[in-house]
Image (cartoon, rainbow, N blue to C red):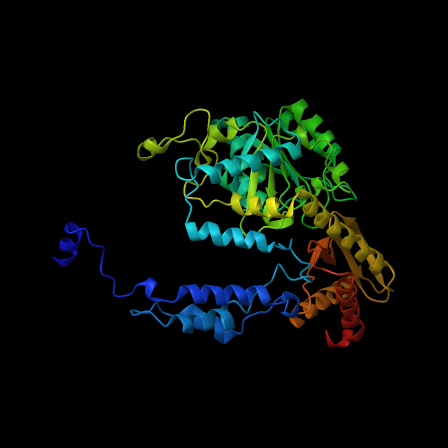
Length: 486
């Protein structure tokens, strides 16, 4: 009854535990200072948690009574946050590292502190104005017309690809024909696309993997032949998935020819630009993206080469009405905050209703750093990949497999006295040893059935010394290895 009495008298709930009794101001200041004062290059690039800690946190129970906050922070700093892959590390060369600006992190602090619900203009007017402004900025970089084009910020490339593919499906395919709809991509296409196609209802057997060229771009002659064959056999070609910077090699497809093909067959052209599309800002690489304005949609990750913290990405479409047709839903409880026809709320352009104001941290970064500095950082990463290629080429028994493209280069150790399997084993061993050491992360991938070491050089804090020493250590691990021990 005391709880009901408090409500009647206008009092708030009496809480046994109240966060206001904790000196959060001091704690937050100390934690921020600790982060800002550290040199991440002195930490391991990656570090795996021992089994006993994994079991500890797998089995840790939720306490009935809260623990002391300093005890919890000790667990976080000494254990939970100590054993990580660090994408900000200057010698983190695997996957697509996310060398985030501290300004983006500041944006995270401010947006999460305000707990912004950025679904519609009524809830977050200016943050959404900023989101629309940045979408238009990116639309212009791709070359779409700003008025009909549009987009929305999403969590990452996977969600961006899914959002675009659902819009493409709804624009291209009658649902009764979905079992006959075909999609065209290559084996170099990011695996998130396969997931998105599955979720969107495309049959796995109707996904055509087109041959790729020596430079790992889609072979357009093979594409045309596959489309013609499908039409002849009664299938309904729906879309082509191109890539602006493949994860393996940084390869950029021929958008001009793909645009001609898609126009001829009335297909939707989607460009997965999650990693590579930021390179369109670089005058060194801009020519590679010629014709991208012919596409119907594109994904673009800000948490890669626009230097944002996870997660921050965009899906952009040439005609925003396609997003509205796929994701625009009415809900009675939103009537009072629905925008008028001149302004489309973000929740009507994508899957999420509850969503953070992801655009704010990118806006802060661009406003403070400026576009010129962003471009210089992108170009610096391109130069690092070229330097790595040059240095690898100077070493005995090392061969370039895919040349520096955007900011990715692939190479491998090859000893003519060893078998293919043995050379593959040596490359894998060296990559694992350098990761285990914590000095650098330079994992392998597979190109043309060969195990290769891949460097993705996107971090503006990476030096030529970092590149040389990483490659030297890889070479030394192989030189010290006795194949008889394998």
